[in-house]
Image (cartoon, rainbow over all chains, first blue to last red; front, side, top):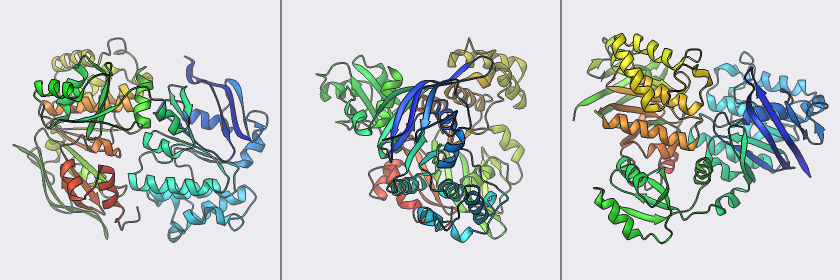
Length: 304
Length: 245
């Protein structure tokens, strides 16, 4: 069964009618971990705000657990948890007071659903008497997740929960999400980090209000049309310049310690490319076929 | 090679808390230096001292040849700074922003004019030059704010998470600007949470609990930690952090 359904949802802002969300449609299944992947300005936050009924759409329709986001907004507010991108808890209440407050607002108690947040809450419990405004970034994030969960929502909306968060804390956060998913909660999460996309059941790649692709991460990667190579040399900047200038290059860009590249000529040999790069003063050249990542797919979509 | 940043046991305490704990390192002219660490490891505090915005509790440091205790105003004139949070004035046009920052850095009207023209040319912003910055796509804003940060030809530019939230193509274009600037001898001091970007740096330091626990080129760090990627190196170091981040 479908938990969230969007049908040509549209949002425009301001006098100049700037389109933030451009006729977006997708479905999310119950218990699915669904990712909205895209840079700032893709329209992710506007979609979250419409689905959580804090922003009215300018066109189209959508439902959450069968309820209409315009007509049934009161019902939706009772059954969703929303963690906005900006920290939105009460800074001058303590950790424990914030949690208690949100439980009470939803007419439940912390004890009632403690099992759901236990794993996360024990990590911040020793700071329970500290004001939320005095917490570090990582702890704020964990408290916000607890508060979004305390009424056992059917659908959890997480807007860029890991932006600006270091790689270790990001990894821990995703492990928490995976455990929550086992509780049959539908989770819609947005992120600008492409490496997090592969942890979702399905992802929508977004750019400037439009959906470029909706698929499982595996299928997105499998449908990549070109043979992809990883190339290394003694100087990355010179390598990138020479790869971009090479007549047989289809796409080339930096990718960590390697450059990733695909070629117009499928018969291109590694020797031929090595000779070309050597001829341009590069040394220590290494060329190998490489696995495609979501980031490669996104770059391909942006360039096409 | 000329040394443009030199620190010796640089320390900042806030009461009992040691935010930055005796960090010692050097950065050479034209180097791209990655300054990494988990949230709360002490990066921001260290950067504030190096930018002349915060007086150290102990230790020494010179930035662009100036002392971080006594010559903070000279430091500010010789560095550029850009972060994702603050960069340009949204309600000024592109040209107004350039003029404003040029004026702050003490450029003459003539210099500002020359700089504006070449910048607009280089970034291909002819049609947007007289439009408000608020209407620009984020990627363009980031490129423009980098260019504005190096408008006064500083010796060093500090970049605090310059590519957060930017799409993968723009992120790479941004790094091309960084490479180009480094080629002309500008020293780049950059923080990032993208571990692939750590690979683009000549050398990297990784802070844990206020200390610098590792400092070397990406290749050597991977050897040292027997890791396949910088992500793994970072993970090995940062997961041992004691500070409740």
